[in-house]
Length: 410
Image (cartoon, rainbow, N blue to C red):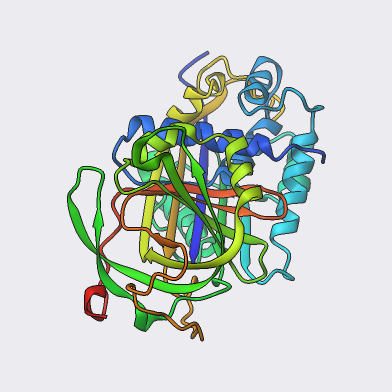
């Protein structure tokens, strides 16, 4: 299943105006971002990478001073940490999950595109390279078409071609000083793969009770599974949590499914960092029948508005204090974009692979069933650290071509 989170932050110079880091911090950020997105898009798919956002904001934080720095640290939940602890954590986490010894592919790339003649303070530049391995390249934002093409090519190269045209020439002008970009790319094979020949056309019922035909993957196997109470009497008040590991068992996808009678929106307010940890600690390995849609989700987020909703506002106006980044006092962020993409298929990755798992008929109900045929919530996390790498929901799965017959004919 290849997926990636991509974030770009554009810093604009205004010429018109004279490692004991708690993992629950990223979990808190994840939930806050998710709640904002579901509030502004009530019936839309959601996808983002909290780790990508944390890394990009870490680069911005290195350039901040005074009240701007205080605002960023408070809004991201760093108040209880000593200054700088968050940078060491992000560096250690990035190093751990991108090691070549892993059985999955995880790439994190950071780059600073700097306007010719714009000076970044040496200390800030050194720390960006130390903590984030940031590349630095001089460009001419006055040549906005050529620069946009150049940055988009960098994005494509660092996301295996999955994200294209992230920025446009309209994003840059004679006032643009710097673009900070973070890209995260993940590609992993399911530990237990789905056999493509067992994929069938299946009805997916949306929260408005309309239906769409989708390709539904199937397998019976050993997965981490649990049932939890939402405290209500609707459909027994029970929802399902399924965790499917990737090869190596270090990274997994966790899927949360309400009962068919209960709209996902009624379950979402329950999601808190403590509950996510409870899910992870409570699911037990057992045989489960899994019906999982093959789907893709792509989303671009106006991160500027999102960060403002979290309380980060100074960096977007003339009061911004980014003097740790540059001696120029007229620098502030003009734009923030987060773009992400996820694909889930039988192999769990872009490369085709065969699996020896044997599927059985839907009629033979021998084990717990997880039939994901209505809206669901998911996250991809590091099982060792608990760090959430990606989070989202599927309200409208993309209808891909599926071969074969309906399950009813099995």
